[in-house]
Length: 202
Length: 202
DNA sequence: ACCGGCATGTAACTGGTTACATGATTAT
DNA sequence: ATAATCATGTAACCAGTTACATGCCGGT
Image 1 (cartoon, chains in turn yellow, red, blue, purple):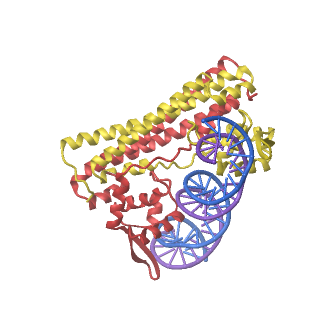
Image 2 (cartoon, chains in turn red, yellow, brown, cyan):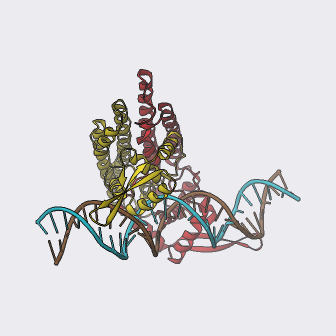
Image 3 (spheres, protein in one colour):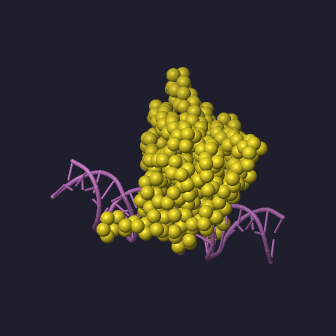
């Protein structure tokens, strides 16, 4: 279960409420693991039961409460163990690849439109990841700054190096995706010019 | 729900029993969408209810039955509609990227071991995908051969072109993954040579 | 007699999505 | 007043995994 380790990892930067975690893991942030609050609150409860995090009760205004969660020493041990060991990758399921492998069965114009859209999306994702990588390489994302206020200075450069490399990697994967889809779109386009293709499979 | 469209797509090649489909979609085949028989049988029942496939009852031996499923015209229309339109991509969740972004918090030797293993796995996957692409480019996988016995000859070259491009794409994505992870491992290795890194975060 | 492959299903569980539900605080 | 944001939860549902369950057929 990766969500629990994602939470533990984020909480090593600073303590957060469930709400803050859900903001951070909301699929906007250029983050690596998205989750909604409806997943996060039960996950926090479980991590707390297991003693991997502890909750500091606080108040908002007069009566309403909030809880700030902090990773415990047991939690840090669990995280380091998980991070240090190899975990077999789940089977990849990319719905676009599935769609693409049957694109010979639809009108070429529709196939090209899908492929071009995919290129656009992947290129936008690459840009986003590269920008995030650049910020991390400067130590200038909000979270890494907070992390640095709590960690020794001699670890900072290494952290920036590793974290920015991951987002550069994400970007180059997105560029690889854009590249093959673009090439296939070009190929199909070239064929439309050359000769008509039967629109439906036989 | 992509599984249903994966099934429809495979059934355009030839009619199959649930068992044959589950063999084909078992995570071995170098295929794009893996599924187990426990998912496939209920999915087939639903597709049948909706009239997108029809079941031809057959017999095995004396008493035991088997059902061969064939895509219907309604099923083909549904498939072409799905294939022709853009579908927003689900948020990607790559557990290795999540692990990698916190690798600065573990001993460098463990980080390098994980990264090298990842490189190995991704490179093996790239080889598998490239081999499959090569077979498809020759029209020599078992399924595409059967497909060609049922489809007009003038569609064959185009089908090989599209389908092999998809697996080449899968391969180049795997290579991109191997590349960034390998570079990061090299970087960390270089740093170990240069200066000691604190093993634990502060 | 026994084993591997063919063939079909169900059940329990986990992880993730969407919708439902509530209410305080803060800024306009 | 009222809307946006902070804050916390539950419930229903969908997709996927693992385990349970059955039984025939063909080969050794």
